[in-house]
Image 1 (tube, rainbow, N blue to C red):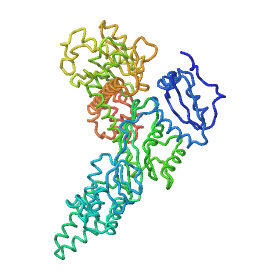
Image 2 (cartoon, rainbow, N blue to C red):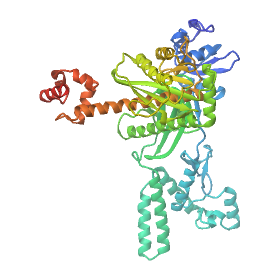
Image 3 (cartoon, one colour):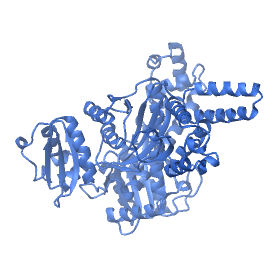
Image 4 (cartoon, rainbow, N blue to C red):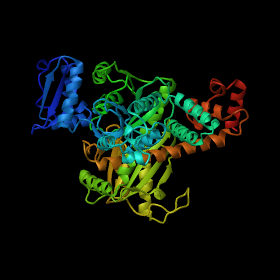
Amino acid sequence: MTDTVSYRPKAGEIPTQPGVYRFRDPNGRVLYVGKAQNLRARLSNYFAPLRSLHERTRRMVTTAASVEWTVVGTDVEALQLEYTWIKEFDPPFNVKFRDDKTYPFMAITLADEAPRVMVTRNPKIKGAKYFGPYPKIWAVHDTIDLMIKAFPIRTCSDSSYKKAMQSGRPCFPGQIGRCGGPCSGKVTIEEHREIVNDFIAFMNGHDKRFVTETTKRMREASEAQEYEKAARYRDQLQALDAVLEKSNVVLADSVDTDLFGIEHDELAAAVQQFIVRGGRIRGVRAWMVDKELDLTTAELVDSILQTAYEGQIPPREIIVPDLPDDAHELEQWLSERRGTSKVALKTAQRGEKAALMQTATLNAKNALMLYKTRRSTDFVARTEALTDIMNGLGMPDAPLRMECFDVSHLGGTNVVASMVVFEDGLARKDQYRRFTIPETTDDTDSIYQVITRRLAYLQEGSERADSDTGTKKFAYPPNLLIVDGGQPQVQAAARALKESGVEGIFLCGLAKRLEEIWLPDDDYPVILPRGSEALFLLQRIRDEAHRFAITHQRARRKRDITSVLSEIPGLGPARVKTLLKEFGSVTKLKQATAEQIAEVKGVGPLLAATIFEQLRA
Protein backbone atom coordinates (compact mmCIF):
# COMPACT_ATOMS: atom_id res chain seq x y z
CA MET A 1 0.00 0.00 0.00
CA THR A 2 1.39 3.43 -0.99
CA ASP A 3 1.81 6.14 1.59
CA THR A 4 -0.82 8.42 0.09
CA VAL A 5 -2.95 8.97 -3.02
CA SER A 6 -1.58 10.19 -6.32
CA TYR A 7 -3.83 13.25 -6.57
CA ARG A 8 -2.59 14.77 -3.31
CA PRO A 9 -2.03 18.51 -3.86
CA LYS A 10 1.13 20.17 -2.65
CA ALA A 11 0.78 21.72 0.79
CA GLY A 12 1.61 25.18 -0.56
CA GLU A 13 -1.20 24.95 -3.11
CA ILE A 14 -3.91 24.68 -0.47
CA PRO A 15 -5.02 28.02 1.02
CA THR A 16 -5.26 28.58 4.75
CA GLN A 17 -8.54 30.54 4.56
CA PRO A 18 -11.96 29.11 5.44
CA GLY A 19 -13.71 27.24 2.68
CA VAL A 20 -15.50 24.15 1.41
CA TYR A 21 -13.88 21.15 -0.27
CA ARG A 22 -15.21 18.35 -2.49
CA PHE A 23 -13.78 14.92 -3.23
CA ARG A 24 -14.74 13.54 -6.66
CA ASP A 25 -14.47 10.06 -8.18
CA PRO A 26 -12.98 9.37 -11.67
CA ASN A 27 -16.39 10.08 -13.25
CA GLY A 28 -16.69 13.47 -11.59
CA ARG A 29 -19.29 12.45 -9.04
CA VAL A 30 -18.98 14.31 -5.73
CA LEU A 31 -18.21 11.75 -3.01
CA TYR A 32 -17.87 14.02 0.01
CA VAL A 33 -18.40 17.67 0.89
CA GLY A 34 -16.79 19.23 3.96
CA LYS A 35 -16.07 22.65 5.39
CA ALA A 36 -13.00 23.95 7.16
CA GLN A 37 -11.90 27.03 9.06
CA ASN A 38 -8.43 26.37 7.61
CA LEU A 39 -8.50 24.39 4.36
CA ARG A 40 -4.81 23.44 4.45
CA ALA A 41 -4.98 22.10 8.00
CA ARG A 42 -8.16 20.12 7.35
CA LEU A 43 -7.17 18.59 4.01
CA SER A 44 -3.77 17.54 5.32
CA ASN A 45 -5.62 15.09 7.59
CA TYR A 46 -6.95 13.25 4.51
CA PHE A 47 -3.52 12.99 2.93
CA ALA A 48 -1.75 11.46 5.91
CA PRO A 49 -0.23 7.99 5.31
CA LEU A 50 -3.08 5.70 4.28
CA ARG A 51 -2.29 3.11 6.93
CA SER A 52 -2.92 5.75 9.63
CA LEU A 53 -6.36 6.78 8.34
CA HIS A 54 -9.64 5.49 9.68
CA GLU A 55 -10.74 2.58 7.51
CA ARG A 56 -13.78 4.38 6.11
CA THR A 57 -11.85 7.60 5.49
CA ARG A 58 -9.21 5.56 3.66
CA ARG A 59 -11.92 4.02 1.48
CA MET A 60 -13.31 7.44 0.60
CA VAL A 61 -9.87 8.90 -0.17
CA THR A 62 -8.82 5.94 -2.33
CA THR A 63 -12.17 5.90 -4.16
CA ALA A 64 -11.78 9.57 -5.04
CA ALA A 65 -9.67 10.73 -7.95
CA SER A 66 -9.45 14.44 -7.18
CA VAL A 67 -10.13 17.10 -4.59
CA GLU A 68 -11.14 20.69 -5.14
CA TRP A 69 -11.93 23.57 -2.82
CA THR A 70 -13.64 26.93 -2.77
CA VAL A 71 -12.44 29.73 -0.50
CA VAL A 72 -15.10 31.87 1.21
CA GLY A 73 -14.94 35.00 3.32
CA THR A 74 -16.09 33.69 6.70
CA ASP A 75 -16.75 30.46 8.57
CA VAL A 76 -20.48 31.16 8.39
CA GLU A 77 -20.29 31.36 4.58
CA ALA A 78 -18.46 28.02 4.61
CA LEU A 79 -21.30 26.52 6.63
CA GLN A 80 -23.90 27.89 4.21
CA LEU A 81 -22.03 26.67 1.13
CA GLU A 82 -21.48 23.21 2.62
CA TYR A 83 -25.21 22.94 3.32
CA THR A 84 -26.08 24.01 -0.25
CA TRP A 85 -23.67 21.55 -1.89
CA ILE A 86 -24.73 18.60 0.26
CA LYS A 87 -28.32 19.24 -0.84
CA GLU A 88 -27.27 19.63 -4.48
CA PHE A 89 -24.86 16.70 -4.88
CA ASP A 90 -26.14 14.19 -2.26
CA PRO A 91 -22.59 12.86 -1.62
CA PRO A 92 -22.53 9.16 -0.60
CA PHE A 93 -19.91 9.63 2.14
CA ASN A 94 -21.79 12.40 3.94
CA VAL A 95 -24.35 11.37 6.54
CA LYS A 96 -27.73 10.23 5.20
CA PHE A 97 -30.98 11.19 6.85
CA ARG A 98 -33.81 8.66 6.92
CA ASP A 99 -37.45 9.46 7.65
CA ASP A 100 -36.65 13.16 7.42
CA LYS A 101 -39.85 14.58 5.98
CA THR A 102 -41.85 17.76 6.28
CA TYR A 103 -43.83 17.50 9.48
CA PRO A 104 -47.40 18.84 9.78
CA PHE A 105 -48.17 22.12 11.52
CA MET A 106 -51.26 23.77 12.93
CA ALA A 107 -51.65 27.13 11.21
CA ILE A 108 -54.00 30.08 11.85
CA THR A 109 -54.34 32.32 8.81
CA LEU A 110 -54.24 35.70 10.56
CA ALA A 111 -54.08 37.60 7.25
CA ASP A 112 -57.63 36.48 6.38
CA GLU A 113 -60.72 38.49 7.22
CA ALA A 114 -61.86 35.60 9.41
CA PRO A 115 -58.75 33.59 10.36
CA ARG A 116 -59.00 29.85 9.82
CA VAL A 117 -57.31 27.03 11.76
CA MET A 118 -55.93 24.31 9.50
CA VAL A 119 -53.42 21.48 9.11
CA THR A 120 -50.60 22.18 6.67
CA ARG A 121 -47.11 21.12 5.69
CA ASN A 122 -46.48 24.48 4.00
CA PRO A 123 -44.38 26.63 6.35
CA LYS A 124 -44.66 29.76 4.19
CA ILE A 125 -48.32 30.82 4.28
CA LYS A 126 -48.28 34.60 4.34
CA GLY A 127 -49.32 36.09 7.66
CA ALA A 128 -50.01 32.70 9.28
CA LYS A 129 -49.30 31.81 12.90
CA TYR A 130 -47.79 28.31 13.25
CA PHE A 131 -47.80 25.76 16.06
CA GLY A 132 -45.82 22.54 15.90
CA PRO A 133 -44.43 20.67 14.10
CA TYR A 134 -46.30 17.59 15.23
CA PRO A 135 -44.95 14.03 14.91
CA LYS A 136 -48.14 12.69 13.27
CA ILE A 137 -50.90 14.37 11.32
CA TRP A 138 -53.56 12.85 13.56
CA ALA A 139 -51.92 14.66 16.50
CA VAL A 140 -52.70 18.00 14.82
CA HIS A 141 -56.30 17.00 14.11
CA ASP A 142 -56.78 15.83 17.70
CA THR A 143 -55.49 19.15 19.03
CA ILE A 144 -57.71 21.16 16.68
CA ASP A 145 -60.78 19.06 17.58
CA LEU A 146 -60.22 19.82 21.25
CA MET A 147 -59.36 23.49 20.76
CA ILE A 148 -62.39 24.43 18.64
CA LYS A 149 -64.65 23.13 21.41
CA ALA A 150 -63.09 25.68 23.77
CA PHE A 151 -62.41 28.40 21.16
CA PRO A 152 -64.88 27.96 18.25
CA ILE A 153 -63.13 29.55 15.26
CA ARG A 154 -63.38 29.03 11.53
CA THR A 155 -62.34 25.65 10.08
CA CYS A 156 -64.09 25.70 6.69
CA SER A 157 -62.33 26.29 3.38
CA ASP A 158 -62.01 29.71 1.80
CA SER A 159 -64.55 28.83 -0.91
CA SER A 160 -67.11 27.66 1.68
CA TYR A 161 -66.55 30.83 3.72
CA LYS A 162 -67.01 33.10 0.69
CA LYS A 163 -70.17 31.28 -0.41
CA ALA A 164 -71.69 31.37 3.08
CA MET A 165 -71.00 35.09 3.56
CA GLN A 166 -72.53 35.92 0.15
CA SER A 167 -75.63 33.76 0.55
CA GLY A 168 -76.22 34.38 4.25
CA ARG A 169 -76.56 30.64 4.83
CA PRO A 170 -74.16 28.96 7.28
CA CYS A 171 -71.36 26.86 5.83
CA PHE A 172 -71.78 23.09 6.09
CA PRO A 173 -69.18 22.64 8.88
CA GLY A 174 -70.97 25.41 10.76
CA GLN A 175 -74.32 23.59 10.40
CA ILE A 176 -72.89 20.48 12.10
CA GLY A 177 -71.04 22.42 14.79
CA ARG A 178 -67.55 22.07 13.30
CA CYS A 179 -66.98 25.70 12.35
CA GLY A 180 -67.34 28.75 14.58
CA GLY A 181 -66.49 31.50 12.10
CA PRO A 182 -68.69 34.37 10.98
CA CYS A 183 -69.84 32.05 8.17
CA SER A 184 -71.70 29.98 10.80
CA GLY A 185 -73.93 32.94 11.59
CA LYS A 186 -73.17 32.76 15.30
CA VAL A 187 -70.58 35.55 15.68
CA THR A 188 -69.55 38.75 13.97
CA ILE A 189 -66.18 39.24 12.32
CA GLU A 190 -65.00 41.34 15.27
CA GLU A 191 -66.17 38.79 17.87
CA HIS A 192 -64.53 36.01 15.90
CA ARG A 193 -61.23 37.89 15.86
CA GLU A 194 -61.31 38.12 19.67
CA ILE A 195 -61.85 34.35 19.92
CA VAL A 196 -58.94 33.80 17.53
CA ASN A 197 -56.72 35.95 19.74
CA ASP A 198 -57.73 33.88 22.77
CA PHE A 199 -57.03 30.70 20.79
CA ILE A 200 -53.51 31.91 20.00
CA ALA A 201 -52.86 33.16 23.53
CA PHE A 202 -53.81 29.79 24.96
CA MET A 203 -51.68 27.85 22.46
CA ASN A 204 -48.73 30.17 23.07
CA GLY A 205 -48.62 29.65 26.80
CA HIS A 206 -51.56 27.45 27.77
CA ASP A 207 -52.64 30.36 29.96
CA LYS A 208 -54.68 28.93 32.82
CA ARG A 209 -56.66 32.16 33.14
CA PHE A 210 -58.97 30.75 30.48
CA VAL A 211 -59.69 27.78 32.74
CA THR A 212 -60.38 30.12 35.66
CA GLU A 213 -62.64 32.40 33.60
CA THR A 214 -64.56 29.51 32.05
CA THR A 215 -65.08 27.90 35.45
CA LYS A 216 -66.40 31.21 36.82
CA ARG A 217 -68.81 31.65 33.88
CA MET A 218 -70.05 28.07 34.25
CA ARG A 219 -70.87 28.64 37.93
CA GLU A 220 -72.56 31.98 37.24
CA ALA A 221 -74.72 30.43 34.52
CA SER A 222 -75.62 27.54 36.80
CA GLU A 223 -76.59 29.89 39.65
CA ALA A 224 -78.76 31.85 37.19
CA GLN A 225 -80.36 28.53 36.17
CA GLU A 226 -79.11 29.00 32.58
CA TYR A 227 -78.27 25.33 32.35
CA GLU A 228 -77.76 25.09 28.59
CA LYS A 229 -75.24 27.94 28.77
CA ALA A 230 -73.58 26.29 31.78
CA ALA A 231 -73.34 23.02 29.83
CA ARG A 232 -71.54 24.81 26.98
CA TYR A 233 -69.04 26.28 29.44
CA ARG A 234 -68.64 22.81 30.97
CA ASP A 235 -67.80 21.35 27.56
CA GLN A 236 -65.29 24.14 26.95
CA LEU A 237 -63.71 23.51 30.33
CA GLN A 238 -63.35 19.78 29.59
CA ALA A 239 -61.72 20.60 26.24
CA LEU A 240 -59.23 22.97 27.92
CA ASP A 241 -58.39 20.37 30.55
CA ALA A 242 -57.85 17.75 27.82
CA VAL A 243 -55.44 20.03 25.96
CA LEU A 244 -53.53 20.78 29.15
CA GLU A 245 -53.23 17.08 29.94
CA LYS A 246 -51.89 16.32 26.47
CA SER A 247 -49.09 18.87 26.80
CA ASN A 248 -46.84 18.14 29.77
CA VAL A 249 -45.32 21.04 31.67
CA VAL A 250 -41.58 20.52 31.80
CA LEU A 251 -39.98 23.96 32.10
CA ALA A 252 -40.83 27.54 33.02
CA ASP A 253 -43.64 29.16 31.01
CA SER A 254 -41.19 31.55 29.34
CA VAL A 255 -38.94 28.80 27.92
CA ASP A 256 -38.91 28.21 24.15
CA THR A 257 -36.25 25.70 23.20
CA ASP A 258 -35.47 22.65 21.09
CA LEU A 259 -33.61 19.72 22.65
CA PHE A 260 -31.82 17.14 20.53
CA GLY A 261 -31.24 13.69 21.99
CA ILE A 262 -28.75 11.66 19.91
CA GLU A 263 -27.74 8.01 20.23
CA HIS A 264 -25.36 6.51 17.71
CA ASP A 265 -23.11 3.56 17.02
CA GLU A 266 -20.62 2.88 14.26
CA LEU A 267 -23.27 2.65 11.54
CA ALA A 268 -26.28 4.78 12.38
CA ALA A 269 -27.65 7.48 14.65
CA ALA A 270 -31.13 8.10 16.04
CA VAL A 271 -32.25 11.68 16.63
CA GLN A 272 -35.08 12.85 18.88
CA GLN A 273 -36.01 16.53 18.73
CA PHE A 274 -38.18 17.76 21.62
CA ILE A 275 -39.94 21.01 20.68
CA VAL A 276 -40.66 23.01 23.85
CA ARG A 277 -42.79 26.14 23.61
CA GLY A 278 -44.12 28.00 26.62
CA GLY A 279 -42.46 25.43 28.89
CA ARG A 280 -44.38 22.53 27.33
CA ILE A 281 -43.46 19.80 24.87
CA ARG A 282 -45.49 20.78 21.82
CA GLY A 283 -44.03 18.29 19.38
CA VAL A 284 -41.45 15.58 18.83
CA ARG A 285 -39.55 14.80 15.64
CA ALA A 286 -37.60 11.61 15.16
CA TRP A 287 -35.39 10.42 12.34
CA MET A 288 -32.47 8.13 11.56
CA VAL A 289 -29.05 9.01 10.19
CA ASP A 290 -26.86 6.56 8.28
CA LYS A 291 -23.18 7.21 9.06
CA GLU A 292 -20.70 6.51 6.31
CA LEU A 293 -17.61 7.98 7.99
CA ASP A 294 -16.75 7.73 11.66
CA LEU A 295 -18.25 10.85 13.29
CA THR A 296 -18.28 12.09 16.86
CA THR A 297 -21.47 13.30 18.53
CA ALA A 298 -20.35 16.90 18.06
CA GLU A 299 -19.81 16.36 14.33
CA LEU A 300 -23.25 14.74 14.07
CA VAL A 301 -24.79 17.76 15.80
CA ASP A 302 -23.39 19.99 13.06
CA SER A 303 -25.05 18.00 10.26
CA ILE A 304 -28.28 17.37 12.18
CA LEU A 305 -28.96 21.03 12.93
CA GLN A 306 -28.42 22.03 9.31
CA THR A 307 -31.04 19.50 8.23
CA ALA A 308 -33.47 20.02 11.13
CA TYR A 309 -33.97 23.70 10.32
CA GLU A 310 -34.29 23.41 6.57
CA GLY A 311 -37.30 25.60 5.87
CA GLN A 312 -37.91 25.99 9.63
CA ILE A 313 -37.46 28.90 12.01
CA PRO A 314 -35.24 27.90 14.94
CA PRO A 315 -36.09 28.95 18.51
CA ARG A 316 -33.98 31.30 20.61
CA GLU A 317 -32.28 28.38 22.37
CA ILE A 318 -31.16 24.97 21.10
CA ILE A 319 -29.80 22.34 23.50
CA VAL A 320 -27.54 19.59 22.14
CA PRO A 321 -25.45 16.78 23.70
CA ASP A 322 -22.10 18.23 22.55
CA LEU A 323 -21.10 21.52 20.96
CA PRO A 324 -19.38 21.25 17.56
CA ASP A 325 -16.09 23.03 16.90
CA ASP A 326 -17.86 25.63 14.78
CA ALA A 327 -20.61 26.30 17.34
CA HIS A 328 -20.18 30.08 17.04
CA GLU A 329 -20.55 30.03 13.25
CA LEU A 330 -23.49 27.63 13.53
CA GLU A 331 -25.19 30.07 15.93
CA GLN A 332 -24.74 32.86 13.38
CA TRP A 333 -26.17 30.72 10.60
CA LEU A 334 -29.20 29.76 12.73
CA SER A 335 -29.67 33.39 13.83
CA GLU A 336 -29.84 34.47 10.19
CA ARG A 337 -32.58 31.88 9.64
CA ARG A 338 -34.45 33.12 12.70
CA GLY A 339 -34.08 36.73 11.67
CA THR A 340 -35.68 38.35 14.73
CA SER A 341 -33.17 37.52 17.48
CA LYS A 342 -29.99 35.60 18.20
CA VAL A 343 -30.00 31.81 18.54
CA ALA A 344 -27.99 30.32 21.41
CA LEU A 345 -26.51 26.83 21.10
CA LYS A 346 -25.99 25.18 24.51
CA THR A 347 -25.48 21.95 26.40
CA ALA A 348 -27.48 21.12 29.54
CA GLN A 349 -25.35 20.23 32.55
CA ARG A 350 -27.90 20.13 35.38
CA GLY A 351 -31.47 20.92 36.31
CA GLU A 352 -34.75 20.44 34.43
CA LYS A 353 -33.25 20.87 30.97
CA ALA A 354 -30.62 18.22 31.67
CA ALA A 355 -33.36 15.87 32.90
CA LEU A 356 -35.37 16.49 29.73
CA MET A 357 -32.25 15.89 27.65
CA GLN A 358 -31.85 12.51 29.37
CA THR A 359 -35.43 11.69 28.36
CA ALA A 360 -34.77 12.70 24.74
CA THR A 361 -31.57 10.63 24.69
CA LEU A 362 -33.39 7.63 26.15
CA ASN A 363 -35.98 7.92 23.38
CA ALA A 364 -33.19 8.10 20.81
CA LYS A 365 -31.56 4.99 22.30
CA ASN A 366 -34.83 3.06 22.08
CA ALA A 367 -35.42 4.31 18.53
CA LEU A 368 -31.96 3.13 17.43
CA MET A 369 -32.53 -0.29 18.97
CA LEU A 370 -35.96 -0.59 17.31
CA TYR A 371 -34.54 0.53 13.97
CA LYS A 372 -31.82 -2.11 14.06
CA THR A 373 -34.22 -4.81 15.23
CA ARG A 374 -36.72 -4.09 12.46
CA ARG A 375 -34.02 -4.20 9.82
CA SER A 376 -32.80 -7.53 11.18
CA THR A 377 -36.26 -9.12 11.24
CA ASP A 378 -37.56 -7.92 7.88
CA PHE A 379 -37.64 -10.89 5.48
CA VAL A 380 -36.44 -8.99 2.41
CA ALA A 381 -33.69 -7.31 4.44
CA ARG A 382 -32.60 -10.65 5.94
CA THR A 383 -32.42 -12.27 2.53
CA GLU A 384 -30.37 -9.39 1.19
CA ALA A 385 -28.12 -9.48 4.26
CA LEU A 386 -27.40 -13.22 4.00
CA THR A 387 -26.66 -12.93 0.29
CA ASP A 388 -24.34 -9.96 0.82
CA ILE A 389 -22.50 -11.73 3.66
CA MET A 390 -21.99 -14.76 1.42
CA ASN A 391 -20.63 -12.62 -1.42
CA GLY A 392 -18.62 -10.27 0.79
CA LEU A 393 -16.83 -13.07 2.63
CA GLY A 394 -16.47 -15.34 -0.38
CA MET A 395 -18.56 -18.14 1.11
CA PRO A 396 -19.79 -20.98 -1.10
CA ASP A 397 -23.31 -20.84 0.41
CA ALA A 398 -25.44 -18.38 2.34
CA PRO A 399 -24.82 -18.53 6.13
CA LEU A 400 -28.20 -19.93 7.15
CA ARG A 401 -26.87 -20.74 10.62
CA MET A 402 -24.45 -18.32 12.28
CA GLU A 403 -22.90 -18.67 15.73
CA CYS A 404 -21.18 -15.73 17.41
CA PHE A 405 -18.88 -15.92 20.47
CA ASP A 406 -17.93 -13.21 22.93
CA VAL A 407 -15.83 -13.20 26.10
CA SER A 408 -16.56 -11.15 29.21
CA HIS A 409 -14.57 -10.76 32.41
CA LEU A 410 -14.07 -8.47 35.37
CA GLY A 411 -10.46 -7.37 35.59
CA GLY A 412 -9.28 -10.75 34.32
CA THR A 413 -11.48 -12.70 36.76
CA ASN A 414 -14.91 -14.33 36.48
CA VAL A 415 -14.21 -15.05 32.81
CA VAL A 416 -17.23 -16.27 30.88
CA ALA A 417 -18.14 -16.62 27.22
CA SER A 418 -21.37 -16.60 25.28
CA MET A 419 -22.60 -18.25 22.11
CA VAL A 420 -25.62 -16.85 20.30
CA VAL A 421 -27.26 -18.51 17.31
CA PHE A 422 -29.01 -16.86 14.34
CA GLU A 423 -30.83 -19.02 11.80
CA ASP A 424 -32.14 -17.48 8.58
CA GLY A 425 -31.14 -14.12 10.05
CA LEU A 426 -33.27 -14.52 13.19
CA ALA A 427 -32.17 -15.14 16.77
CA ARG A 428 -32.65 -18.68 18.12
CA LYS A 429 -32.57 -17.91 21.82
CA ASP A 430 -33.37 -21.50 22.79
CA GLN A 431 -29.95 -22.45 21.39
CA TYR A 432 -27.90 -19.74 23.13
CA ARG A 433 -25.18 -21.17 25.37
CA ARG A 434 -22.92 -19.90 28.14
CA PHE A 435 -19.41 -21.03 29.03
CA THR A 436 -17.40 -20.66 32.20
CA ILE A 437 -13.66 -20.41 31.62
CA PRO A 438 -11.83 -21.28 34.88
CA GLU A 439 -8.27 -20.55 33.77
CA THR A 440 -7.18 -18.24 31.03
CA THR A 441 -4.38 -15.86 30.14
CA ASP A 442 -6.14 -13.35 27.87
CA ASP A 443 -9.04 -12.87 25.45
CA THR A 444 -7.38 -14.83 22.65
CA ASP A 445 -6.80 -17.81 24.93
CA SER A 446 -10.42 -17.59 26.07
CA ILE A 447 -11.62 -17.60 22.46
CA TYR A 448 -9.40 -20.58 21.74
CA GLN A 449 -10.80 -22.49 24.72
CA VAL A 450 -14.46 -21.78 24.01
CA ILE A 451 -14.21 -22.58 20.28
CA THR A 452 -12.36 -25.80 21.12
CA ARG A 453 -15.11 -26.81 23.54
CA ARG A 454 -17.85 -25.95 21.08
CA LEU A 455 -16.24 -27.93 18.26
CA ALA A 456 -15.68 -30.91 20.55
CA TYR A 457 -19.41 -31.48 20.54
CA LEU A 458 -19.38 -31.85 16.77
CA GLN A 459 -16.72 -34.56 17.05
CA GLU A 460 -18.37 -36.43 19.90
CA GLY A 461 -21.93 -36.21 18.58
CA SER A 462 -24.90 -33.95 19.12
CA GLU A 463 -26.31 -36.13 21.89
CA ARG A 464 -23.78 -35.02 24.46
CA ALA A 465 -25.43 -33.25 27.39
CA ASP A 466 -24.34 -29.96 28.89
CA SER A 467 -22.67 -30.57 32.25
CA ASP A 468 -24.29 -27.48 33.75
CA THR A 469 -27.85 -27.61 32.41
CA GLY A 470 -28.27 -31.25 31.44
CA THR A 471 -29.77 -30.20 28.09
CA LYS A 472 -28.79 -31.50 24.66
CA LYS A 473 -27.10 -28.91 22.52
CA PHE A 474 -25.13 -28.10 19.39
CA ALA A 475 -27.60 -29.90 17.14
CA TYR A 476 -25.59 -29.23 13.96
CA PRO A 477 -22.59 -27.14 12.84
CA PRO A 478 -22.84 -23.50 11.77
CA ASN A 479 -22.17 -22.26 8.26
CA LEU A 480 -20.44 -19.20 9.69
CA LEU A 481 -18.63 -18.89 13.00
CA ILE A 482 -18.14 -15.28 14.20
CA VAL A 483 -15.90 -14.07 17.01
CA ASP A 484 -16.05 -10.64 18.60
CA GLY A 485 -12.65 -9.15 17.89
CA GLY A 486 -10.00 -8.50 15.31
CA GLN A 487 -7.16 -10.47 13.79
CA PRO A 488 -5.72 -11.90 17.07
CA GLN A 489 -9.08 -13.35 18.11
CA VAL A 490 -9.69 -14.74 14.61
CA GLN A 491 -6.27 -16.40 14.58
CA ALA A 492 -7.01 -18.03 17.95
CA ALA A 493 -10.35 -19.33 16.67
CA ALA A 494 -8.70 -20.55 13.44
CA ARG A 495 -6.16 -22.51 15.49
CA ALA A 496 -8.95 -24.18 17.46
CA LEU A 497 -10.83 -24.95 14.23
CA LYS A 498 -7.73 -26.46 12.63
CA GLU A 499 -6.87 -28.59 15.66
CA SER A 500 -10.43 -29.91 15.90
CA GLY A 501 -10.32 -31.30 12.37
CA VAL A 502 -13.83 -30.03 11.65
CA GLU A 503 -14.25 -28.84 8.08
CA GLY A 504 -16.88 -26.86 6.19
CA ILE A 505 -17.19 -24.02 8.74
CA PHE A 506 -16.39 -20.49 7.59
CA LEU A 507 -14.77 -18.19 10.16
CA CYS A 508 -14.58 -14.42 10.58
CA GLY A 509 -14.17 -11.77 13.28
CA LEU A 510 -15.97 -8.46 13.67
CA ALA A 511 -13.85 -5.70 15.24
CA LYS A 512 -16.05 -3.18 17.03
CA ARG A 513 -14.06 0.03 16.68
CA LEU A 514 -14.08 0.17 12.89
CA GLU A 515 -16.67 -2.54 12.14
CA GLU A 516 -14.02 -4.40 10.13
CA ILE A 517 -14.47 -8.05 9.19
CA TRP A 518 -11.31 -10.12 9.53
CA LEU A 519 -10.75 -13.45 7.81
CA PRO A 520 -8.11 -15.92 9.06
CA ASP A 521 -5.63 -15.67 6.18
CA ASP A 522 -6.07 -12.04 5.08
CA ASP A 523 -3.74 -9.16 5.92
CA TYR A 524 -6.46 -6.56 5.37
CA PRO A 525 -10.05 -6.60 6.58
CA VAL A 526 -13.20 -6.89 4.50
CA ILE A 527 -15.17 -3.62 4.57
CA LEU A 528 -18.89 -3.92 4.02
CA PRO A 529 -20.74 -0.73 3.02
CA ARG A 530 -22.07 1.30 5.90
CA GLY A 531 -25.83 1.10 6.06
CA SER A 532 -25.85 -2.27 4.28
CA GLU A 533 -28.18 -4.97 5.56
CA ALA A 534 -25.23 -7.37 5.81
CA LEU A 535 -23.25 -5.17 8.21
CA PHE A 536 -26.36 -4.41 10.25
CA LEU A 537 -27.07 -8.13 10.71
CA LEU A 538 -23.48 -8.94 11.69
CA GLN A 539 -23.44 -6.04 14.11
CA ARG A 540 -26.69 -7.18 15.69
CA ILE A 541 -25.33 -10.72 16.15
CA ARG A 542 -22.14 -9.38 17.72
CA ASP A 543 -24.05 -7.03 20.03
CA GLU A 544 -26.38 -9.84 21.09
CA ALA A 545 -23.41 -12.06 21.94
CA HIS A 546 -21.90 -9.24 23.98
CA ARG A 547 -25.17 -8.63 25.84
CA PHE A 548 -25.59 -12.33 26.61
CA ALA A 549 -22.00 -12.64 27.88
CA ILE A 550 -22.29 -9.55 30.09
CA THR A 551 -25.57 -10.82 31.57
CA HIS A 552 -23.99 -14.16 32.46
CA GLN A 553 -20.87 -12.54 33.89
CA ARG A 554 -22.90 -10.22 36.12
CA ALA A 555 -25.11 -13.07 37.31
CA ARG A 556 -22.06 -15.14 38.28
CA ARG A 557 -20.46 -12.21 40.05
CA LYS A 558 -23.65 -11.51 42.00
CA ARG A 559 -23.97 -15.20 42.94
CA ASP A 560 -20.35 -15.30 44.10
CA ILE A 561 -20.80 -12.18 46.20
CA THR A 562 -23.99 -13.50 47.79
CA SER A 563 -22.60 -16.91 48.63
CA VAL A 564 -19.25 -15.74 50.01
CA LEU A 565 -20.02 -12.45 51.74
CA SER A 566 -23.70 -12.56 52.72
CA GLU A 567 -23.09 -14.36 56.03
CA ILE A 568 -20.39 -12.00 57.34
CA PRO A 569 -21.87 -9.86 60.14
CA GLY A 570 -21.79 -6.12 59.41
CA LEU A 571 -21.50 -6.49 55.63
CA GLY A 572 -24.53 -5.05 53.90
CA PRO A 573 -25.12 -4.62 50.14
CA ALA A 574 -23.48 -1.16 50.09
CA ARG A 575 -20.24 -2.35 51.69
CA VAL A 576 -20.17 -5.45 49.50
CA LYS A 577 -20.44 -3.21 46.44
CA THR A 578 -17.63 -0.98 47.74
CA LEU A 579 -15.36 -3.96 48.44
CA LEU A 580 -15.99 -5.44 45.00
CA LYS A 581 -15.30 -2.12 43.32
CA GLU A 582 -12.04 -1.79 45.23
CA PHE A 583 -10.71 -5.34 44.74
CA GLY A 584 -12.49 -6.35 41.52
CA SER A 585 -13.63 -9.79 42.67
CA VAL A 586 -14.07 -12.07 45.66
CA THR A 587 -10.94 -13.97 44.59
CA LYS A 588 -8.77 -10.84 44.90
CA LEU A 589 -10.50 -9.94 48.15
CA LYS A 590 -9.47 -13.32 49.55
CA GLN A 591 -5.86 -12.56 48.66
CA ALA A 592 -5.88 -9.19 50.46
CA THR A 593 -4.54 -8.69 53.98
CA ALA A 594 -6.65 -7.40 56.85
CA GLU A 595 -4.78 -4.08 56.65
CA GLN A 596 -5.57 -3.69 52.95
CA ILE A 597 -9.25 -4.44 53.59
CA ALA A 598 -9.33 -1.90 56.44
CA GLU A 599 -8.19 0.82 54.01
CA VAL A 600 -11.48 0.58 52.10
CA LYS A 601 -13.87 3.42 52.89
CA GLY A 602 -16.50 2.38 55.42
CA VAL A 603 -14.60 -0.72 56.58
CA GLY A 604 -12.83 -0.37 59.92
CA PRO A 605 -10.09 -2.59 61.41
CA LEU A 606 -12.55 -4.73 63.39
CA LEU A 607 -14.79 -5.49 60.39
CA ALA A 608 -11.71 -6.00 58.19
CA ALA A 609 -10.39 -8.61 60.61
CA THR A 610 -13.78 -10.39 60.56
CA ILE A 611 -13.84 -10.41 56.74
CA PHE A 612 -10.25 -11.66 56.62
CA GLU A 613 -10.99 -14.53 59.01
CA GLN A 614 -14.28 -15.54 57.38
CA LEU A 615 -12.78 -15.65 53.87
CA ARG A 616 -10.03 -17.98 55.07
CA ALA A 617 -12.21 -20.18 57.22
